[in-house]
Image (cartoon, rainbow, N blue to C red; front, side, top):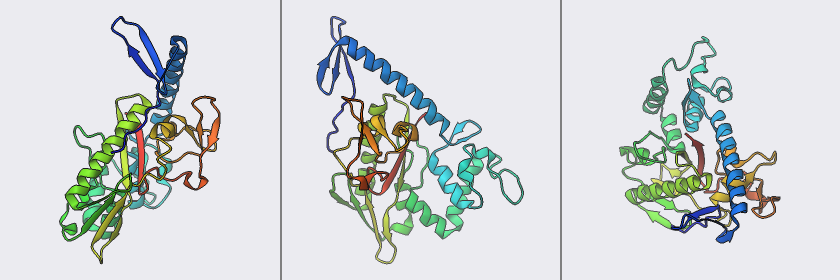
Length: 284
């Protein structure tokens, strides 16, 4: 994996208890460091509150956004995604809750994947996920491709640097590493340890030729995860950190002048940083 440049404020405590601050690899004054530290903490706290408000929940229990997206396609009548609490999603025909219990959410996903081939393909495209103890990334596309339906497939992964990996096991291992480094970079950018990341893959698959291909090429390596997460804003000047999406923003706030500079080329604005995977994150 290529090394990522960390441009965040660094705080070093010497053996004599003296505190030193560094920015972009250069030492800055203690006064300037403390001011940036206080501003960063305030900004992250506010962003965390807004991110929590924009997180789907079930009676206060956080729900990964991809759960809501998938369920809204299974229950396609009405604009369900406008309601952030899934316990309040109702059947338009009866007016009764679609999910009387939290367990009904997973049950509906599981049943749909077993009985409907279209839903199975949709799960393949989106990446079927399960919470796993100790894992930072909750979506596990390998849960899908290790099923017997894919035993005769050829598996191809194009990684973030454009390198090709072949084979089912090799692809799974490489994707796990990819999810880990992205999650680590987002965690470092936000400055909080408890970060949940969700990977919504859109693979290219050909059932007739038995080819399954995932392309996670970095569409612009010059724009770092830290720049997108900490200093990216959309056309309404909403921080990327609030939206919780790893997509290219309209502008990036200059670390030196504070000026919002348009992202170039314009063609990448709004697109995934990594080609065929939509990545979202939240503070838990």
